[in-house]
Image (cartoon, rainbow, N blue to C red; front, side, top):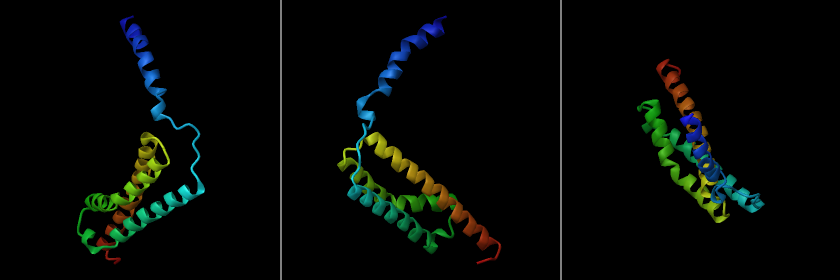
Length: 126
């Protein structure tokens, strides 16, 4: 019985934080110009990752360490995207969520590519 009362007492706290206006984005539409800027920065970010991956310094590192180092080298590109979002009044939470999603997807893809390249080198393919 105490658990039910405790949960009932906490319920307003959870609903209040979920309805916090600073964490919501109310139907703001990004302009075509802004979308082009975001796409350009996204392209630059991925290009940075590919260019870094081609460097021979990462070939001797563990695949996870190489991935981490490459992502850190290109983090400044994502910072540019965050600035674009903030200029357009996109809430921090939403901008950060999108950047995190992009970072995770890129990291997974990069790690897979590095592991494949490492396996090919070890098998004598390259």
